[in-house]
Length: 360
Ligand SMILES: [Zn+2]
Image (cartoon, rainbow, N blue to C red; front, side, top):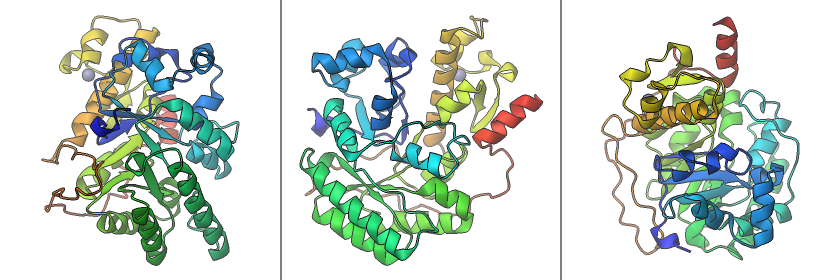
């Protein structure tokens, strides 16, 4: 496994190759837009795609099968459980964030998918601690998170594991981080973010600032981008290292075109004003119902979001620390943390996008 060369990127889009054949074909399979993409164990079990069955029965890993189709070998594949997708259903927000959940996975199934994946990075299975959870429930969830991590470390080296920070209490977060660090983990992610965002925007901001502060020498990822415009807040204001998203796929499916971080109906787009590879094709090809249209609109949206990740003089992504002796990573000393806009100008949830489309 080329884990030593594996990199994470600031934006880690969800790569829907298990269930959407377009992701296994050119141009998307020849992925050059980010250094890392994400998929979930949940996708593996949800998919009824014949291609997946063939790969499983061939004994190859999913990464190898993707590379055989043209996926760049040095691009990192990150696997997550998809627990969030299942939890979101329970929390009644799955529709709003554009996912529909019909199965729940056991840990055994999650580990089965992980072993099959050939991934470069593995997100430790976690439990989402909700802001409203009672202390005894939180304790149970944290115990489970810890035992899941130990189980994962039986099959994956610590340098390839992303451990998830859950809970709101600072003492709880500190003890969880101590546990992770004792086990050699240096890649962390903030979890439970979308329920928290929905619960209380002020607590959400305070929590993320604290988590960033307490992991300042480590890689910090955020799970969940409830609004595309939060990308800028996460990466530039909080100065976290990376964020994953399926919002770009969702917006593309809704035929939205990103202008900066503002989604607009694609019929308003001026493809000739953008030089990205997607728009170069879109300005020639007028058939907006073709699969190529989806791929190229998706490329435009990804390229635009990635551009936003590097705006404001932000650092390009720092190297992922795979060697735990090396902690000499310089962090941006100029991180200025300012409050996010709670006013909704220019920010759209998936729901709002849908409503705007109906009106448009
Ligand atoms: Zn474009």
